[in-house]
Image (tube, rainbow, N blue to C red; front, side):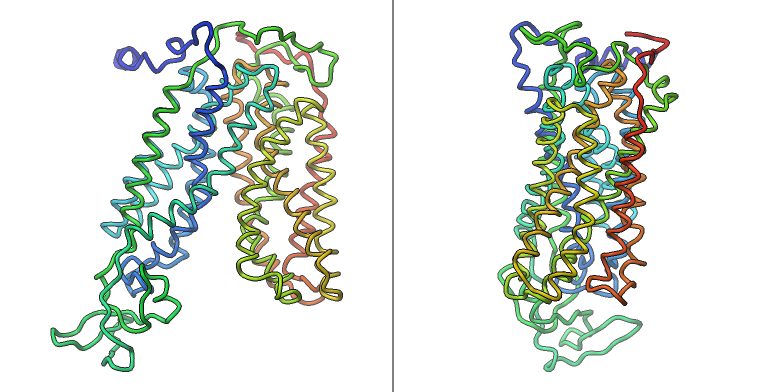
Length: 520
């Protein structure tokens, strides 16, 4: 009875109450989707928080009581892992209640996760940040990620790849906006700690791993900051001794601000969602013939539970996992690759600013690739698009060790340009794989339950998040025979993943007899 009452109380959020009226502009739905995905895409800017969280007490430098980096970096991993789980289980719920309800809940989770995380920062309870940002916020990430997919596919049966590409493009570009926004807020809310003097002028003692300075008021716990560390303070600072606990990194206030801003934007966008009437189709559009390579493979609407029993679903799961695995590990070390391979041979060109711009361009091409490849799949077909990913991606990964080896013996801008171009194309395909898969699922299983099926297949993302970075330690220790020894074994593994994905994709045989026990 309580469930019935709750559905009545929140019935205005359910899909049957948000059916679009005649004359509704379907292009408003992608705009709402992009807004939500830009908000949750800021998760990729998590590393901007790391310095602040590891210097909460010391502010200018880590104090003895501060969290270490190894304790903080896993918050991001927990959020991504929870994203996959929430998408898997929330996708089926999405098909029952519609995108507005899921969008509203995701706004409460993502915004609320920041608020809970801020309490963890203020009270210096790391588990609260894991709970807030990692678990609660991660649930918001997963629900928000899948919320627009099936709705967009139904609004744009003529351009379903383009429509989902536009929405998921926002997730890829979220870090472009999120990183500078977070940096600005941290700098705005930060307060410099009390400067006590130069290290030479102070009487410093160390007790139980903590440093203290003798002052007129007794011993005060301190940190000793270098000139580089002091320069990072708001307005700059001097190298020397600073009192612990007298400043503020601005992290807690930044969490609160982002939580409120993201909540408001996501709520407004969620209330902009509309679903098309039953059997709606764009004016003047005729569905393609089934023999057309771009046509829907099945005219049925396959239920989520039935889809999980088909080999087609698991073939697509494996090829998505391989596509993501091949790119996700490289994203985390892209800047290091650029500086380690080319920085020593071409220091006049590959400066710190050049490497930072390179990382920014990765986000740009990741975002653009989501729209470009998803839109292209509307014309060349989803299967041909994935063939491009695996064939072209394998060739590009194979070219990188060659370019790195060549530049060590002949420092030429041609090899740098080739490396730059190859990696940028790789990152377009990384993003394109995410953006194309919803339309691919609709081609194979129909549109009625595609949101739930899409949520389940995103568990491949969680798996790739573990497989992608895992070879890193062994690759870094391999520094014997090759000019770029840290990266050659890694890239060989990525080539293997791409090739394996291509083989699985080539084995796919679409069955026109896929049916669901409950056909919508």
